[in-house]
Image 1 (spheres, protein in one colour):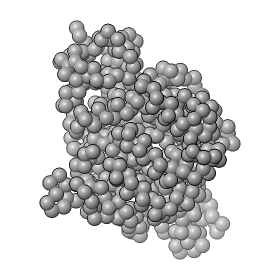
Image 2: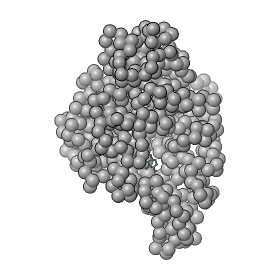
Image 3: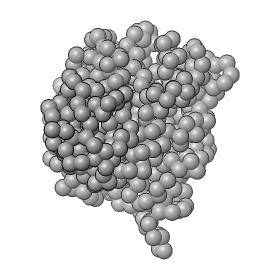
Image 4: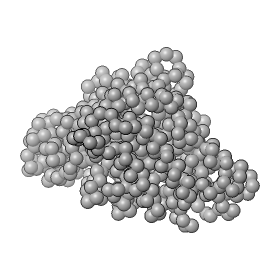
Length: 537
Ligand code: NOJ
């Protein structure tokens, strides 16, 4: 495992949605014990780091993004001591640990909010006003809720998630301390939730300039921890003060901004290290659109020296197998195209091809748990099982995000599919479809052509063959995306309607069957040593 200082530039980062990953105590909810028991699976998958969604004490009004205490662990997930043990064990497995930090809002259950409720003089850490403005919550409904004494507080998300006031220096101090608290415990980085929303003016709450000073300060703190030590040639072998595994500590932004120039400001050399590429995630399965997004991404990142990232899914969006099997293959937040017919076989073929495309592009790549198993979106959850506040706050118009958060199937023939470990366990917090027996990790390990084995092979090859750098597009026929990486790897994705001849070279891996040197539709191949063009004409 490479331990270079700049490990994050090309890292494959696996997103763990802790509630749904693995349940170690059989209560139906994923936890740290379950995660620790599956570290071998993650090591064998070949990822460099994990990113965990919030693990802090929380009433779970928004899956943990309502944080009651930033310096402890939700009891359902485990204890602080277990979190420390997990960090150490992940490092022993060569896996870095990134955790979520949620600076835009807290929880109504937090000590600060409880103080504010009890004493109107203690309200400056939040946005309390005598009159609400007309803002709507991102989850639907009004963005203001009234407290018993008549004042209103702002919550851009659920009412249980009061927005913090970043005009108050105490809020800055608090989060700087929180970063240090976890860096001291060895975490290798933070994923910054809602990173563009922190500051508010009378008429705007997104991308206000003040936010950049916050991230400059956070970068200084991260750099203090990830610094090169005297006599350390590559800057990162062995233990560092604070228990880090070696290498820089990173800040990854959740920045949804349509304007590339504004987006790029977050990735200046003294701010965040990387940010999620949501343009790629939302892009339809269309060769011209994908080419446009890839070019735009490279043009945005390369001049500022920040590595791009490639994301196909996360805990907020429709699973790719379902998305790519629909007539409209893009992702939309609004209704999520819920229930629009999907050809899952087609979707799975495309999701495989998309995974090899994403993993061949220069920069970092994210894998959301279950993506490697090719899980589809669960669209038929009973209404009473749905927990995402989006569902209730939209009056049921938006099904919300539960369908991509269903607990993973690990083994066996029936629910809970090993989610609760080997012994008897309570039903998982969201019900798993019976049909997932074919998609368990155990079943897929035994099948050489499975999605899981494709991800394992691709992640291994990617680590061996790809580095930083850029790509060179190769001439190709309509509907085909073909490029060469500096390492010599050639990636060819056929999004056209007919098979195309592959270029000369050794075939390393393909997302579907390649016979007679022809690449079928909706398939990606990786080759090495190929000639200059791929059209063969
Ligand atoms: C983005 C997170 O990914 C999402 O799950 C959450 O609901 C919002 N931020 C609010 O924290």
